Length: 366
Image (tube, rainbow, N blue to C red; front, side):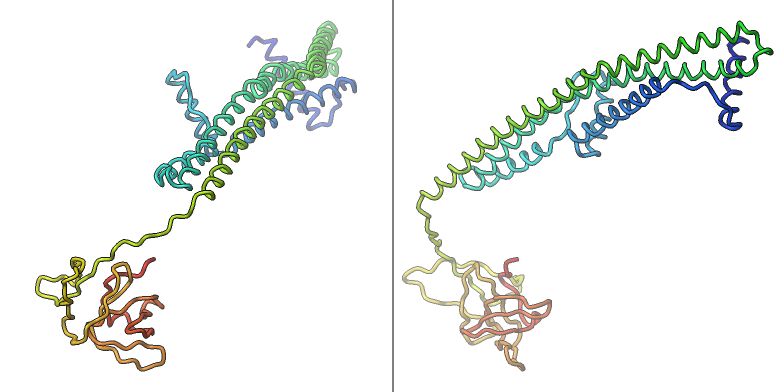
């Protein structure tokens, strides 16, 4: 930096200290200029805030926005043309529904309906992606250009104006010590910067119809999105109503139980692990030949899908509501009261009994 430049910087710094600390009066700008400056300042803040809030509106999840920003940066570094898109919640919901609908089977009413809704949700996600692209191109990018170019240029002019004002005020207070020609030159530069800044602010505010056009583009994009979304949802609603009506028109199929196998709770031997093995279904000529290991009574056999247990010891009831049994009895389980007691039935009687007296054969359903 030249000596003249250093001197100028010193003058400006000295004047700024005099005004901030000493309370010295600087050259006042006219009210029209200050009004322009205020409006430009509000415009700048509005544009920055609107860009930020519009991005949040399009992409509400801050974590996903941060991840997407990082991935876009990495794509640019790697020279990839196509960068990953924002994970739309409609698309995530659609993938979930389609996945489980296919697993359940499209031959079922619920499975087919899940697939229908899932595909519609994925279409909504595609429409939302189009909204993101339209709003970015026609609204966010133009506003960002306004920030990066016009508003930044105005800030540069205002900063330059402030520097020249400080330089002029310093020299004006020291007239006699500083040549009049230098003071006059400082005043001319101050007026020159004021005019440039004023023209740039005026032009910005007078052409604000451009920002109105951009707002109109935002609304048009939203309208297009909602029209397409309504169309997709109306088609889906009609499809689901047709499916409901079709299901109602079909007669309900009655449940036909399959033959139940008989299980043999035979005597345990050295190779038994305490389990049970199914016996073949009885034939017309077959005779009952099963018996319990240590009990002389023939236990009532239970269906294979009925929860039941085998008594390990005799249990004599001592209180009302308890169920007595003998070692080897097969008891139907109806409920587990707590970690120590079951409720069950034996020979038409129901009651409670301790868990550690029995061995579960078919557990209760969860």
